[in-house]
Length: 265
Length: 204
Image (cartoon, rainbow over all chains, first blue to last red; front, side, top):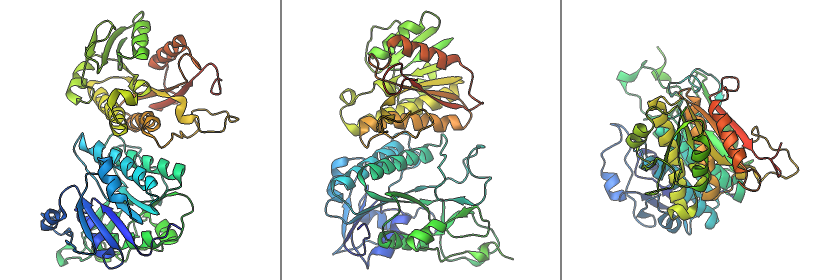
């Protein structure tokens, strides 16, 4: 049974704002092994990724903090050992070498270690690039749904994460490792400031708070229809460009935030 | 035609350089310090600037590396995956910048072997590599080639070769590469896949 309602959960790449949201949502429900390429104490001090992005809370026992370089298999394997579930939030965007090491090789290491340790469930994460500036991306489409193939083009970040997704899928399908891949695009705070009213919103948007809760639903969801399932983890917005129906159907998760004040008069 | 061949320090790369040289101007590169191929250059294929320079005036790049790369060449599985994926990305993006018209990418039919042998497996079937670095590496190269081609900046023809010497001869590989270098695009798609085998389960 891949459902993880209690026990130990490893978070890789927890030093960023998505990690901060995951820690906040999971800390009272699971024993967390919280890891990042830099010490979590350092990550907790900031700076913030953007002015209103959350910083990770530095937790004490029974939780554990650890430095893990996801590109090193021995470190990943040691971190995965004894865990019921793994959440991989690692990402590196602009560096021509490290983007491959973290986004592609890191995904390989995580999937391999999860298979070796018989981890119940892996939540893998990545971007859904809604627009990459060429005619065969999905920017001009509507009613785009979760299982549509990602078209990363030659964008270094998008492409290397895409390679990592496919590696993870292949491990899942060959070994029966249950993988949920959560896709994101634009994050923002739940709180809408008065000066933001009517300014509009990206059509694929998620609040940090909803992002964190999504992991709780992902861990607790029942068995998936196939070993590898992809989810749009975003708010349902009236633009009707991106439909997060699958997350509601299979995870029972629906973003609370609809950000109406941002697109209403 | 001005042609660049990667992995020219491998048996397959050297053979291609030799056969293509009868009709084309061939530049050959690889990671070994020296190789027997005429005009061979040792080039850091992970260096975008170096690759952009070496691709100047090239019309077609034949990327033999994904087929020839082996675990023994690089040390460990992570390095193999990184080496094949990243060299392909650097080559493809440098080729776009240098105005190269087409990349011929040599991969392996091994990515299709997990299908039942009763099936007639063609390029329209989804690749099914195994969850090992050796199997994933040429598949990653294909994904990189396909996605860069999708931008419309360059044409990429992927040749999935059967086992050379068993399922396909060297002459047949050279002929397939020659065709891939010059044949017109299929329905204007910038990405094309062909299977290359004359015997065995993938022969047509």
